[in-house]
Length: 460
Image (cartoon, rainbow, N blue to C red):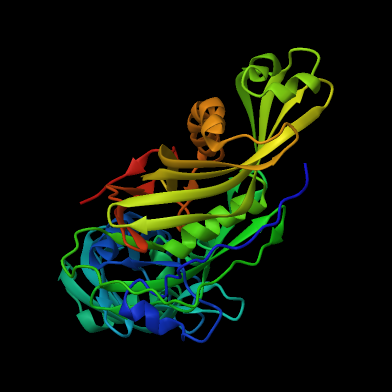
């Protein structure tokens, strides 16, 4: 069977998740986003909730460790921090700037067995995410202001000198320098966003940040460009010059995160799968050469024995995905070689098979599950024949039932592993709602922290 020519289908490009996202990348550049997301204020609140126990553990380790000897002190401090409790831990959005981290830490301090006092360490830090020269996202601290005040004491002494001793014991500079590590998404997790994810054994997807996020009243907006590798080699993807725009998400969205995927993303996905040979199919027909002789008499001169009839299909042009309001359609353009199998495959005719199948989109954990739900339209036409003319009506009578059943089944075998969504390590998605719109798909969802045991943690 000759190798079929491949032609890229026209694809629409998702320029932005919103007007903000469209401003990230100028229209003339070839680095264009095809998907993205908005982390909402609700999402930031959840990240603060799950980070609070982690922050308390880190601070307890740092603050309760025995202090290093200070040669400038005539006598070592008798103050010992014996309890650390994070009272408040909040992360709020600062539009056009970044995020503000606010922490109140209650400290229990003893200087003698009978003397205790309570102090509060307050930290106010401004954070933002920037892109480093390697193209990775990094969480950095732009400002940090720590304060320490005494709340209650059984000590009958000058509180100023007492507080000064504690100030020297607490390494404020170190806390501010590493304040971003109190959150549960350090830079290692941010880098995992752009990790390659497998789709099939030979095809991988990566979501590459195009710029540092932007900060709006609706949330933190990030634009991503999808790249695909087949057998370890990046493949060039067709890009449509037609920009895509969509309305901004609702201001009162209760979801932690809203992901958006353009029609171009889905076309790129199926183009990559085609390049990986995922849609080359071998379909066993219930027919045999003997039964076909009754319909195509010239076959009698080709085959002297009764042999099984097999269809070997390959794409003749790239698959195309169309997103309409409420539904997604996959269009496959195949050429099927029809032949008999003895010691080798012997083709006696070929036909063009154009299939339109409804796609079902869902999400499990961090994977988008795509399946061909039902075939909506099939067109068969003769491409070449060694057994004389064969009418389209006869092709449909002989092969349509098999194609209608087997093509969606084999597509679903290819897609059964799902396609990983953009995500950072240790977080998964829950409360997912997939909505198909014209030209794009929206996926509002909540974040869920996975425990090390494999279970998930839900707060709030």
